[in-house]
Image (cartoon, rainbow, N blue to C red; front, top):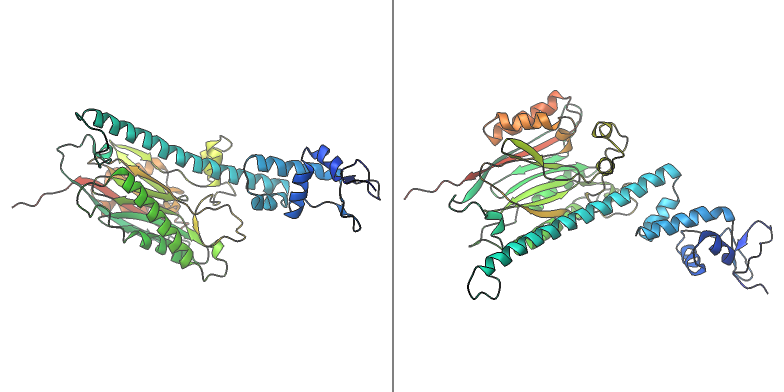
Length: 405
């Protein structure tokens, strides 16, 4: 009897055994059997008597694609979706996967660099203390360096949402309070509930309410806990939807500690910083078109009309089962150094997609108060046609007024 793996043809004379196909595809017979069991690459024929697997040589290209996708770390469940697509759709899915990997790697890199800088600064500070042998317990001094003697800081803020000129319902949400600044852009059947739930989950946080300045490590841990709370809240909010994995929200939020801002960000809503008259975007969109801009395959002008411009790589969503877009539910978190005189703008893409950054800067520079700023920004979106819901929040960092005794 022929042993499985010998280079013989099947009854039709056009198929090859698993051993020959392994050589054609450069995969091991063990891997091919595993892919068959998982439904990733089925043999063209399985002998009903002896169970031997036979493959069509034309399947070699698909087999190599599976192998390449495994080499870039794609999970087997996602590979199954990719190989079932036509070439164009598969390319979009692979790009989306890799862009998400790069976004997550960039977030880890930023955190690593922050920790390096923070621990280096702490080490220099400890070296200046005679006889010191360990941490002082306050690792949060780096964010307030350069403000000695300036007095405690506070934020003045305002938020506003608008349905826009086209939509009939508003799925955006915004909040501005003494400890929290947030915008969220909901989508899908439960979008309005998702955006509201994400922001509501952040409100109980007692940032900076305790005595003494919290350490950077404590703040980062609290940010992670806050981000997890928002993710859970969104899942619960959309659980009753017909397709919960198709409903969710972006979230961009800044939590004020009294000396720092903690940033929580996922999706394509944005945060900007106005400092020294210059406007800086301090978040990175988790979107397919942003990944294409990053790798040079798409210009910013082309991105505005790209057919996949709404495809998010990361968002807060319901329990994923068969979502057509690549989403993950873990927001990026980091700490943001603040200076008196800073102005922060958070907005949904209903503003940033229709108003360019030069006009955003002009609007936030031209007015004195956050209340005036949000009204002016919503007005700009309306002037641009108001094709989408709009949410924005503006906060000024100011020296806190001391009560006179």
